[in-house]
Image 1: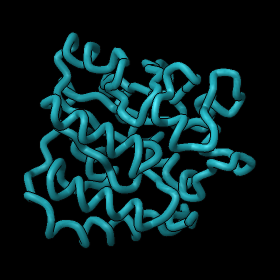
Image 2: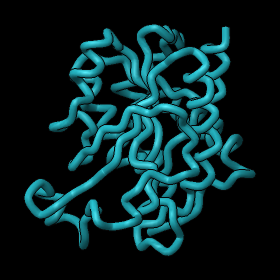
Image 3: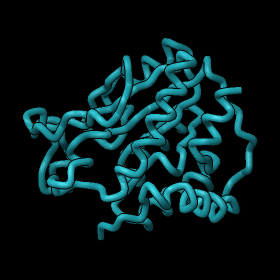
Image 4: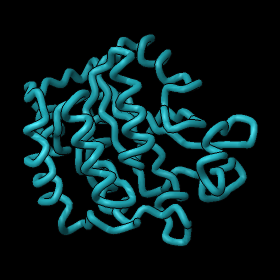
Length: 217
């Protein structure tokens, strides 16, 4: 099931190919970012998914780190809040996660920590227990309090936490952007399927350099 579909050498071209492939599903709305309304949400970039010795290692995850860090750097320069999520479970809060998966990412597990490869000066961190970053966290309250209506979503996994959070954000009235080259899944089919679905019903397909270029204007 696992494959390395993204590498540092092919991610730009492969992501562009994906974008061109899914444009036919998109409403083709013009990209319009407003830095004062925007947050960057970096989902679950934890050692559990990034370390090769972990059974949950995502082979393509290393290829997206540079693009995520470039987004973080751009947002920090514009005083756009950077939010990191950290997935942590125990038997009491896991619910169906405990049924679906063979183990849980517990607080005691050293691989639960957010990777040092994610370079962020002053992140806001929300711990979550489910795929959805809005579920029983302070994320929505934070966004409402600070009048934020646009969310850039990146991180892992494309088809689980990123997609679920994107759908949840949409039904809550937030405008979402999920750059193709800043998320990773276990294989290409999972990644492509999510981008196709989101492009059809939730957000336009976009690349990280397009977002950075517009934010710099």
